[in-house]
Length: 191
Image (cartoon, rainbow, N blue to C red; front, side, top):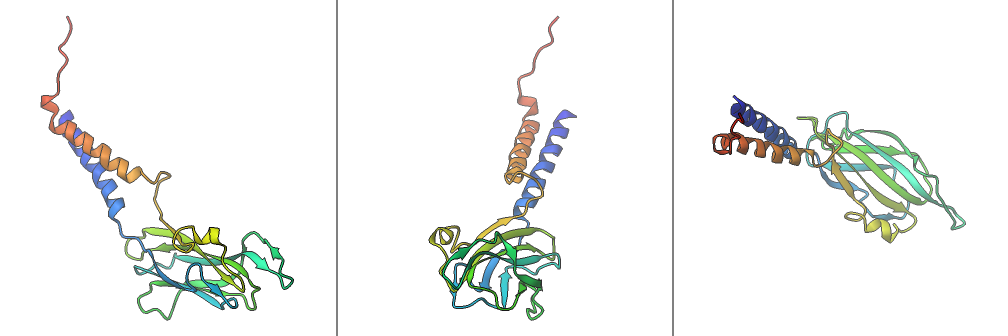
């Protein structure tokens, strides 16, 4: 009985971990503007395209992190939101793009694009961000983060990123113990 319980529990844990590891998530394909790009002036919208069809719960926003004043001085507003609306791009027939419409006449500065991409089929998600600049260069230390400032991670349903891998490992150990149960040394009763 204990042997069958260990094997079933181990298989359940392994399947749980493998399901999360191999669940497809929407990942960044391209964007306009591109990550790390320096533009002459601020754009009117930002579009990010992903690898899979997106669910309506997907979000995108643009914030300003540095403003370049006409005097040449820098101001640090601390992440003020500059996107007025955002949704899945209605002009994308595959529903793989998120589009944010920006405020008019934005000042020159450094902007960050943040998104959460939820796959339409299985609701698995990813999130990420990148920077672009208008009227100035993107600082080198930001360009060194990821690929031209692009950072992206999968959304896990737990606090620990390694939980699915740990579940597969622990499940495999339990299955092995269950399979070799009869060959494990037994303690003889003491009288």
